[in-house]
Image 1 (cartoon, rainbow, N blue to C red):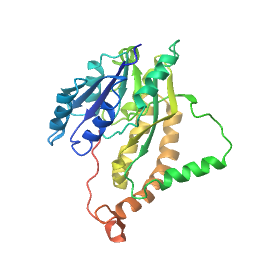
Image 2 (cartoon, rainbow, N blue to C red):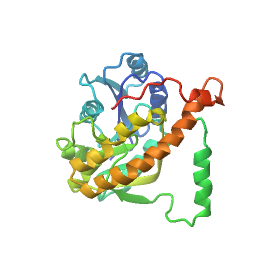
Image 3 (cartoon, rainbow, N blue to C red):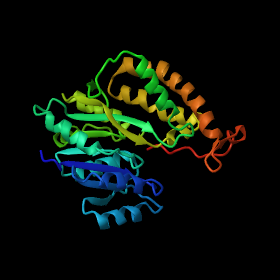
Image 4 (cartoon, helix red, strand yellow):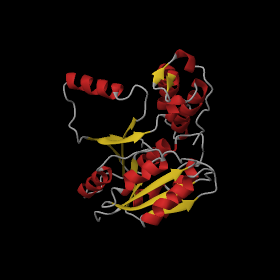
Length: 291
């Protein structure tokens, strides 16, 4: 596997505000990225024009179109078009850090026995009104706890994280006809379970972290619950009945309570003035659409 062996697939739909930043981060890592395939899924804003401006400057940036609306269709089109031996899939609002592509390539190079069929990392929300307070709190709490793992610990996990995931090309070819095309399930969870059920292993790299948009956090409580119901539905699809029950009765209520408190903080914040006000909580908003 060459150093420049990574294909990156970026499905996109009306992302004119962030797609430029996403591609800027990726094109700064072309020593390890073979191609960046942006799949436009019927954007009506300036997304396509922005992507074309990058394609004019970087031959590695390739724009393709998928007319069937939905993330699963755009994802498949991009993964099918990828030519590298390793294929990363991120969201168009994902901001990768320096060294992200090199970390992935180095991990795959070191896995000479191909013990891992796929890998993923973390996502940390950027642009939150409380800034880095939560992240700093996590770090302080972590310093008080005895270390359980080293920085480069690799864990075997059943699912993948769509904003920061990589498949070997042969892995994608193995699960291509097994992944669900439903839009009411979590496609990344489904993909990871398909990898596992096909005999492959998913690696979780705790140190592989990308920035993700907090837009889903701004969704109404009803919209958030509708979105999160995709998790038990995905588990049921794979006959993981005990996990589906736990997700529906324990995880979903807990994460909804967390979301409610977080939503109050986010909604009360005025980005223009940089101040918090209780009057902002009831302001009109539009829920983020299902993928």
